[in-house]
Image (cartoon, rainbow, N blue to C red; front, top):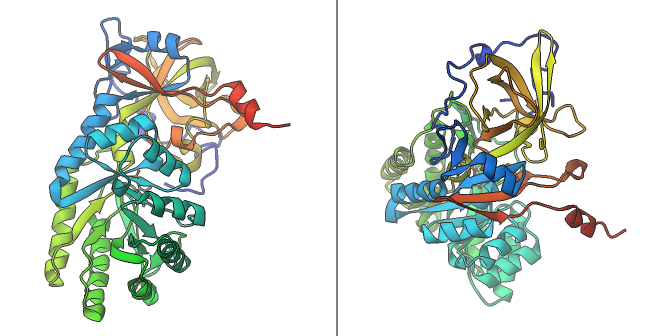
Length: 463
Ligand SMILES: *Cc1c(COP(=O)(O)O)cnc(C)c1O
């Protein structure tokens, strides 16, 4: 996937594009369990339901657009990551995928740890009762205020991202009369995405300290000399939406090489290694993600093998899935406003949200699927582009999808797998109000993040 694509997508030219959608699915009403949350199904009338609740009633009660999150599914996924890695490893949920106080409580109850990367995420975690020692603080430019608050709160680890930050955190910890547990984030020259990875000597990105040129080794040297720091491990995060484990093999090989060098130079064996997140989910039926237990087995084997070869005791592993836990648990429910067929091209279906509630299609050329939710239909499939209501032609939610040919204004359509990086990246573009997140469980629905109001917007505007 290209990140420099035309905002309207690579297929914005006025030719009927080629692609896998050229064959419509055999049954437009079917729900592929890979892309829908666990409890999503159709009732006897054909209406989509989640947690036993009918989306027509949910739309009446909570309005559209709205994100509906399947709490049981979230908990089950969190738990399966936790049990897959067992007691010898730690799972940190990456809060940036989607964070709210309810989510923090679920994570706490299911025994997961939490990654935060800003003062706001830290405040959310602490206010919902996540024990500070189970929080990791990330980011390439944490402010001194954020660092001070994290150290004061007693977070379990701060992941250091630059030479300046090594000194900054050490100084603040010393000032506060404490020793902060830290990891150093390094870049190993591996960038992984879906079924590919590239491995180079250097990595051209803002995060981490390069392994190349001895910079990471120098960072370790400095961290080890500073009284305010307790260096507990090395961190590496290689990409996003990854299906193939081979990028992790190269990354682990290089990280373990550094651990070996540290032992040889300083006589210290660092006790932890963090392999980051980035594990993929199914956005469409074409995606085949692996189960957490397969991932846990693969990663543990990789690290153990590399450590055996380097004659190091295997460090404690941690991983940081975000998308893989929350992504599949939610869908966005929209109401269709207009249906505009363009002869010989496709039909534009406009919904009551758009790039303000899902920026991923415009930003990453991401693929999504979509289904008619308020009813079933036997009409012929029509090739559609689901677009939002924003003043921007790149405002696309689903680039290419088949919906029934009788789709009409007032129908509800649902886009699955929007639990990660949709509400958390939502904006107020065009002063559109950010949708609520409604958690559904056992026939009950409750708002966990309320819909924004015009008063909210006007309150920030102080004239
Ligand atoms: C974004 C990020 C994650 C989570 O990525 P997912 O793709 O949501 O799993 C984990 N760790 C770090 C350091 C990240 O930046």
